[in-house]
Length: 444
Image 1 (cartoon, rainbow, N blue to C red):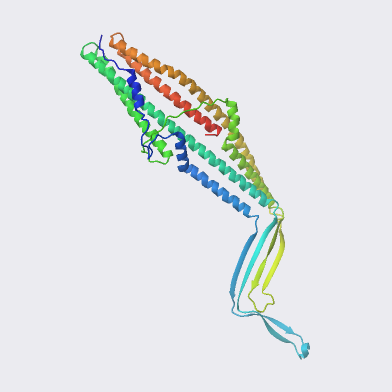
Image 2: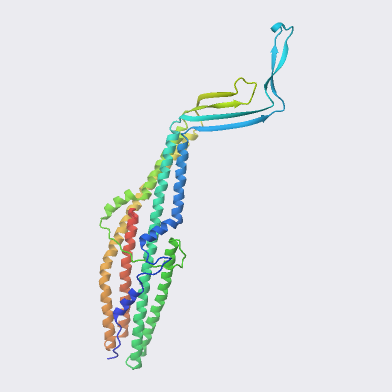
């Protein structure tokens, strides 16, 4: 017998759980953060979402402007004129009028040298060939498209946050596994050093154990760095300082039971990208109709009041009313070509929508397959973790009983680390694939 010193595998599992306390103060909070809370915070501070909201407000204003073109336009004007002379008119009186012996010319004043005038007029469109009606319809479609783009931006941000959230959990467990390997190999190196002092094993065993321990410490350093980067990325998405502490809950993933074909049909109905492209195509089509409407007669009613500050006039206030028409009979084909260009844009958007439908179908199927694969890996790796722990225990017992070799122990520890990492990666691959599937469907 080489030694009675043994490392309990339960101590390694205890190390994994003590790394994650149940609660701590995180950025002013006393409880761990869950994914839904992270989503709520991110959607309030994200600049892409803020920009999309501004675009929606701009489109709403454009719609208001389009609707305003069908309402009456009221214009008020006023001016005050100062002339160097009074305005007069020469009146010729023929001979014989009132017994006059010869013709005379009288200067009749019309205005004084200084006078004011005002005008208030109203104009109401009567017929515009559909220009206004289709312009409003186009602006409505643009507003709907920007709302869909805002929904898309929110879905993208939620997926980014979910990915960062999962990366933090993955890095935490990777660090825990690396640290448990350091604990395990430290104990084994101490055991080998003890039996080497007793002259029971060659120096090569001790050197191999020390090299393996140094390599485990290097992986621990790397995992620490990976975790810091993951936390910084998560904090950035939530608008926090990159170095802010991060304490989050474990994620629970719900398996999607529907088949890929059903989910694809659902995605094509719910994805905001599909709705946005449909509204964009409609907007271009309505703009084309509005442009063609400009080639038709434009009828409008106008009326108003003009006031002249002139004591020489019998009526200083004059009312007027009129119905006017404007018809650009020939414009060199400008409007026709503009409308044709807008229709071509409509066709281009429809082609883009068909391409988007194909890509969405692929996204749904890929995410669905990834989730299915990860679920199967979880059940397989769950068994291998226990087997790897037992293999390590047996290998250490065999070595301490002078039956096995140090390479068997080191290989067993490598397998234990690999099985743990495979298990955690399967868990978080399944969680990420499920999130990606929900994003592909459009209901994240």
